[in-house]
Amino acid sequence: MQEPSFTIGIEEEYKLVDRNTRDLISEVPETLLPKCRVRLEGQVAPEFLQCQIEVGTKVCESLDGARSELAYLRRTVAEVAAEHGLAIIAASTHPFGRPSQVEHTPKERYDQLADDLQEVVRQLVISGMHIHIGIEDDDLRTDLMGQVTYILPHILALTTSSPFWRGRDTGLKSYRIAIWNGMPRTGIPEYFDSFGEYQRHIEILVNAGVIEDATKVWWDIRPSHRYPTLEMRISDVCTRLDDAITVAAFYLCWLRMLYRLRRSNQRWRRYNNFLINENRWRAHRYGLDEGLLDFGLGEVVPFRDLMDEAVELIQKDAEYFGCVDQINHIHAIIENGTSAHRQVDTYARAVSSGKDPEEALCLVVDQLIEETLIGT
Image (cartoon, rainbow, N blue to C red; front, side):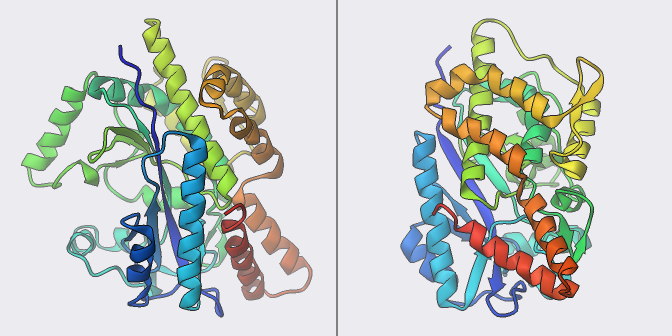
């Protein structure tokens, strides 16, 4: 079996906020996207809502290359936004923005989505991070998709950045998932024995006129329709750049570990979606804080312990890709918390010091603006 290229591509969605009010913009300035496109040569695009902007790295051969690319993308979009009196935040929800105040991008694809999905899609004031790993063989890509679902809740827990919704602390570390679950064709995918079987299922929907192509299948992980990659989509967007690269490194190494097992005629044990979805809920609700189910033990285990085991499993792969430091940064995320933890802490400290909730939420936005550019 020919080893996959294991190339890396990262897509991130940012929110555009007014520097003065810290609120989401309702309409994007006409010159903002053209200026970004001049500087980023096809690596930037509008998103469904005008308050969002999406960037994507080039195909990268290493994690260091992906980090440099992503740092440049964040920095450049932030500079162009600043020219328009705006800032970007890498967070999966805005602390107090409301869906009713933002307009969707006038584009045929988005007009159709708005018409098809109605109020569901109007709630999508959320952002994500998608990580593509190059796996050229169709059947291998499909097989690994079925095995990697086990670790997706762990990845979600490491990335949570959406604790607030419409000015309220939701009590969930990733409220984005609650909104995303309202969309069709989302969540953990079914298991497919081959790429051909996966294609046959997609073709049923296409031939029935339900979808145009597989880009409208929005599972937590999917074979990319455009590239020979396995695209991980469950994660919130990480506010800090180093956290994003660590998650990319973990996903990359886990896939190679699964590939090594297959090369040795072994495989990761297949677990029913019933169990994986329970861990998905726990990550969505608690993030790192309350542990996940260890299916073998049949009990909830502290997240730190689970990740210690996971890191040990991929040690060879971290060494192979030269990303031991990035993998070890997982421990720092667990120790210091994710963006969701920091947002909630900032809000609580501000309120306890006498600030009203609106002022406290603005301070959370200020923190997000600052952290988005750390390391760029």
